[in-house]
Length: 156
Image (cartoon, rainbow, N blue to C red):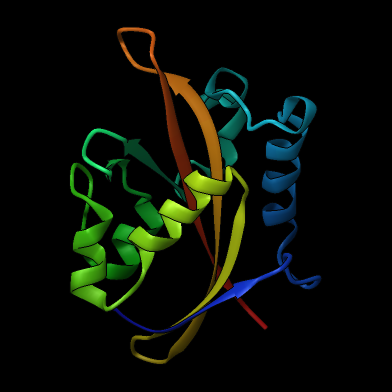
């Protein structure tokens, strides 16, 4: 799979699948007083309907990089690549994208982002990507920022 275009959106398209809006609503409902949600409030049971769609990218401030803790099964199937344990920089090198820079912006602003991604495979496909920041803690108890990276095939 090779990305052909990546366009930032101000909001989700009105004709997007209801599953996308439900996920974003759950994320927003978990935001206390405008802060980002804690992963305890967005656990596996709550996110189960989207488990094949969600990748988890964890920010590593000491390295100014991310590690892909979970690569979304739907993206593994679509791309034929599994980046779990890798860095998004590898995705950028392989596909000519700006995933790393976008993730840095999400962490810096602690705000969600939405993108339309055009992909040329057998035929042209459009995907919606949501990047939703969340907070968790490492084993030592220090705060950690993760980004839920979610891809949905977008049928017009």
